[in-house]
Length: 397
Ligand code: ADP
Image 1 (cartoon, rainbow, N blue to C red):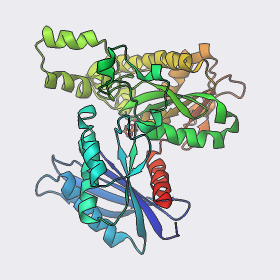
Image 2: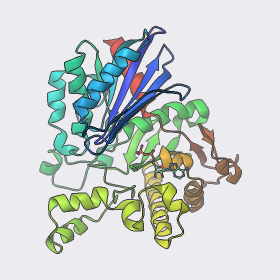
Image 3: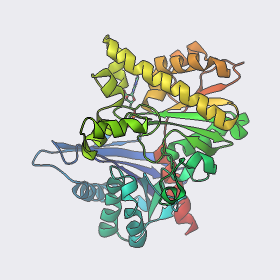
């Protein structure tokens, strides 16, 4: 990797494409940006350099933009703004790799065909992750593309953490717990020992709390259990997703309320969680600023469920040495961290109230010096993890 070599990371969701460019041997972030509002309203593109100066912006006012149009624009933009940089790899965040895709890998047409077979396992996310890969393959076929899977970090979990208590012929179809947010947890596992060397071999529970939210139990940096399961709707209540639900509720909704599959899916993925309980917003900032008691109820429910899952994950690890907060809520909500840590006092968690209130901007310890369990804030950085993987794969090829 030369000084002017760059890795581009693409993180494509249902209505947005985010990208980051990392350059030189240290993989310094040199540019990042996104196109939002795909398929509806006015699509908007913005790109910023490392100093946050805007280096490109555009609106599409003449009709909706799709993934392919967005990627065509981004590839053109990259080619005109590369400034002598050579793109050595494009890394993609891919939500599901199934059982087989347990490490980052080079993507070609054959691998893409295989990954498309996994779409039924993640119908809301996987098609959007794969669309940009096809676009780059068609428009810049010589550029190596690497797929990084959100499930891969969890592949080595003990069998009992992965299996549902279902008959084996169902399990054999791939109906099992996969876990997600793996790239975020892998990043946390990679930086935590640098921050506190004693944690390299520790039992750590990390909470990635963003619009999607999950928790992961890690032993010496390896995933042992996670709150998300077969899909990314399990576990914690999230912005709009309900999290763990008695499966009997789904039967009730269908049998007694005559809801069809599409209506149940919409309820569970888009109308529940913080939004559903509060009736106000899926956004934690809005809820924290609201005087409405329903906003309080939604936050309290999230805190309660994080506490329950923390106990469960600590049990899976046989104890707890560190708790890590990450994601938009984990990194920014002083009040939520304080509430979670107060509930976790029984595990030996003692928060340093001043360090927590200082709301650190980077990787920081926020527990008291003599807390049995260290508490850390680690800003999420899945993109850097993808860039590192992409570079490793092209250098090994
Ligand atoms: P995504 O999962 O889409 O990447 P983020 O990790 O950006 O989402 O997290 C979004 C969540 O973080 C929202 O609920 C938002 O309100 C919350 N958040 C961001 N900043 C703050 C803040 N200062 N205080 C409380 N919550 C915040």
